[in-house]
Amino acid sequence: MMGNLREVKVGRYLCVLALLLLSVEGVGFAATLRSGAPVGLQALHQPLALLPASAAVFLLAVLKGTLPGERGIFWLALAAVVVVLAFSLPLLSSTPDETERHAAPGRADRVLVLEDYRDFEFPYVQIYVEQGSGPTARRWYAGGVSLDDLVGVGWDGPDRIKVTHAPTEKKREVQLVELAPDGAPRTRAK
Image (cartoon, rainbow, N blue to C red; front, side):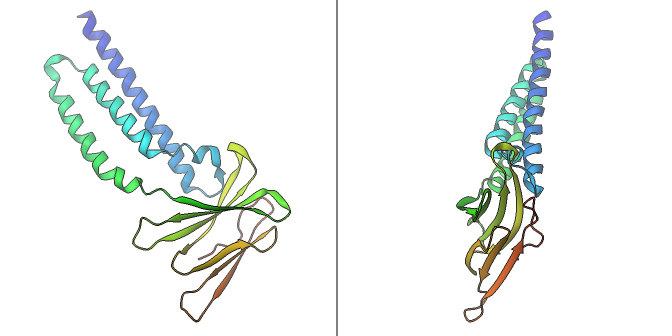
């Protein structure tokens, strides 16, 4: 009887660990959605590592935390985790390719970052500005442009980004994205 209580306690601790792993992923995911969030928080978003790890720990918690006569709960939890992972991992696996990083002219603490998303039907480029260095650096979303229409992205001075795209073969459009002193874009490229 004492061994069963110990296993139930271990199962509870493992369940807390699984929730902690999910919380870390949640914080990282929320930081990626917020423009200007610290890069260190955005780095916590690792769905391909944290979601399967938390699922495995959760299944182990259910296996350890149930008594031998209650193993049906384990198989039900296993089926639920497999179904959730089967549908969520393909959606989360399309990670961007960081294609370019350019320091601003005269500003070593400000970097233009371009990320390509090619796994979709309409590939596009996300434009970011990083201000600072290390995990406390801030990353600001400066816009997104279709990769098919993009001609070029670059600095047009230390506080301005120039985005050139051609929606038609004969017409070129230039957008200027002005930056605030903290690096936050005042406008966004579209």
